[in-house]
Length: 153
Image (cartoon, rainbow, N blue to C red; front, side, top):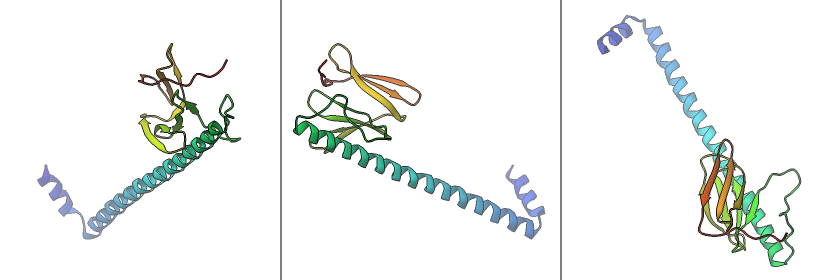
């Protein structure tokens, strides 16, 4: 096989070999640049969403501290921010990479990574200890060892 390729390569003129080698190098450089650009945009988007989720958690925490948390939790006009409280007062927020959990003062506690973009989520079940996550093409149900907040009816 390699002999056939080497023979084919030798039968080409110097101009053809240089053109092929340069074209292959250019194609590789463009593919690498595209991968780097997509990765840079992804990182920028995730950082922006993390910052937005953190700011929303701080605002909700301030409302909790003032005993003025409305039901449902308010969001800025024109944005789609999903935030849910658990029974311990932690704030759960949807983000690009899954769910982020913040303590009541707005500090990020941890992340629950989901392989798809989270569209919506809620706590359910008799004890509110099932986390239902609606993602871009799937519905996830996770049994957790904590409970969602009980809202007044």
